[in-house]
Image (cartoon, rainbow, N blue to C red; front, side):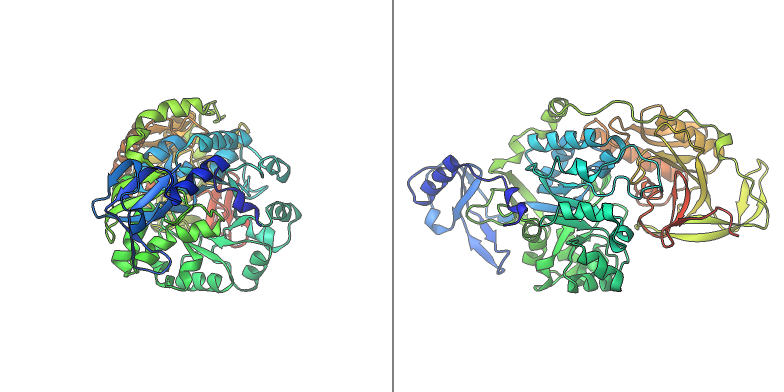
Length: 591
């Protein structure tokens, strides 16, 4: 038996005996949901209700339970019951909300289970952040499982980050009931080349889920990566890439994030056969998209409505397949012995949610929004200062661009976290001395924040639309230094200093004034405010960024990925421009 089987919130013997008694028609149930039909995720079609629940567990369903005594009876109004949605891979930190606030926003959307990698917080404050996440998981109604962050830092000797998370430290957490395995192994060159430290981590989690992260890796290199024990991958961007990985035994996570939108490209791979090895994940989704579009529910809706996927397949990959992949044998299906995480939908194709149950509890009765502040306080969040950087000046971003010379620019690709590389020629300077290039470009910087006071790294960026002002963020994957893009050096300095002043945050400046700002008090990546406040402030930040000329769907999410040196092609770490395809630093000037 693999170790995953332990992580399923096992029933106590006392509760099991009660459940058996209900099944034998010898005891009253806690809840009976009448007038409901059940989507059959295994064979297709529908099954008859009612559904009978005891101690948060499904006892059974069907006509034989008609009128079974229950403490509470709910009219399902003829709606369809499906299992609660499961996000196969995500980072709560990308919501910039605490786990408690994230739960209050997403549990009503039917998201009853997440498999999260807290490597953003761990990269900044180490096991202090991980311990807090585990405390939060223990108090959550939502099933918040955790994968142990495999790459802290993402690439050793490439960036400066706040902590290390070693294999020796991981051993202290391997028996935690909320830990399922090893999170995304981004250092695929280390795996392929047999780096002993990397292989030690993978060996520690042998027999558990080991998450992959192998964008564009194929052929013999992919073979080596998978032979080391990787089970899944969420970085496929094309149908061909996904089909190769499926054929080689990889469970493919189809991702629809705020920046990396891959669902449409991958939807054609989903059919009756492949659904056994396809899951849905969001990876990185902002509060704006959760409120305006949805979460896993939005992915199911899109698969059905835009791509003609049969409903039972779309709902299957949103729950059952993921539960099977991670060994969560009490989740992912409406069946006897399964946890009563149930979503009632009034319209299957539109995924119109009428009611959500978590462990047999009606989510609407839990007052998640009202309870969130007290539950957050009870979790003892790490709100100490983690941005150790003296204020910067415009002089820190001065560079002598010479007319006629070519310079490298990070090319932002809309709705992708993959970037390109462009070579721009300086064709002159304006009246203020700012360089003019043969293609519209903005200035880009990544500023080290952990007390070393390294000179800011500097480059150019294209594909954003920015013509004035600046955007800055302390969310910079995965080391979370301070990243900003702006029209001038003065704009960069003002935006960076605004987030230094609040121990991290998101900021937009224009015409010498901070137009919108969200403080991120926990590790510079999470706000302690409510979901409504965060979402409203993010809307203001998006509006302010549009005034700067930025046309990206989610400018701060895409900005956050510009320092990430494990996603091709050109990125700007706090130590300089990094060519991911060559795995080496390159100069700003094209030689």
